[in-house]
Length: 481
Image 1 (cartoon, one colour):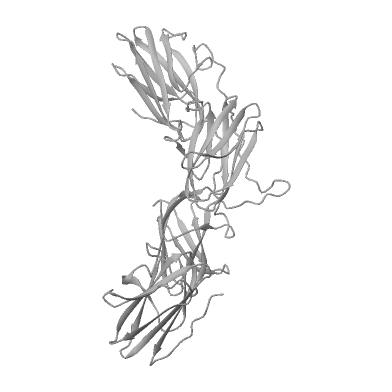
Image 2: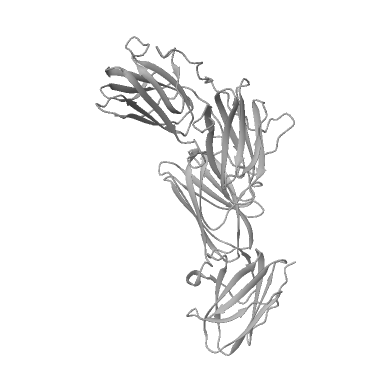
């Protein structure tokens, strides 16, 4: 038994996360929701004798009986389903009856049928585009009462519809206890966002935003056909959007603006992995920013659909292109040795315009095994580092019969410590004063490899390490202004 659905009502919406979107006086820079070519409004409720005269089917339990008013004694129903919903239709009849269940899309094309010899009859469908569906209950044998239940995702905070980056369209009434639709999305810390909704002027739908603990953050309950809410994500977390009908029923479209469309509004990125999704041909690229330390060898890996083509571009703080890599098989690697401590920008682009991807950023300095080589020159760096505790590791040669003098200055308002280790990773000494400069001195007995770990106790930012070896040379520490 094949399951599927034909799409006949198109409501195109864009869901893109950008940090801030300027709006001209004429509104020309504002994202505008697509006007659906076939607006869907549920029927007023017919007798159920045909597709054109179908009865309204509600989420939850619907009770009826056969024979129905159709020429073949069937009953026809209509229900509006939203994109992203996973819907189950379940039919239960009386003993001694055998009723069958049929599902049709808005063009009255058969999607699925359940014609078992025993109850329950059940059909499941995953909805890709908002549209009306028709359900027919037909008697194979017998007459009597039946229950037709409709359950769906998007009915509560615990079973939401995930918002894809290429947009969403929906229809009310929804499956929630008060006919709402529930959505969820993830926003990064400090992301400024604007969520807008467009619907038929004859309807009055409300839009509400909740945080991960299901507390209301902001809402818009105006009766306008265009409404929006704005805010800033104070922490990275899941948010919930609830679309609730005040009056009326029918279709709507959502667009969300957040971070990532330009370098100026780049998404803050850290070491490790993050997953995103491109939103189609209009917005096939995302911009990110991340701080690297001088001397690091960094690798950025982008994993996507093997059938799609991706590109990575690395820029310095002056927006000069440092490295470009392209791969036509779903995975692309970008490697680079950092020459100067500071902020770098990354553009990820899907040449195929749309698709999901995962970015993984790694860099040397994460541990003893891949510590950053350094000499006796002043060395600048930045925290958080690539290690799990946000520290960063360096390695250098210490020569016998010399004394190591090591000094660290950090960004004002921070508290960074540093630790000296032997080649076998034994801790030799710690510099952990409450103010800068942090300083330690160590007498080297034999020529060997040594390690330095810079650890953030409070705050994050830049630092400068200065190392002198009495008997070879002595460099002066440079405070950070």
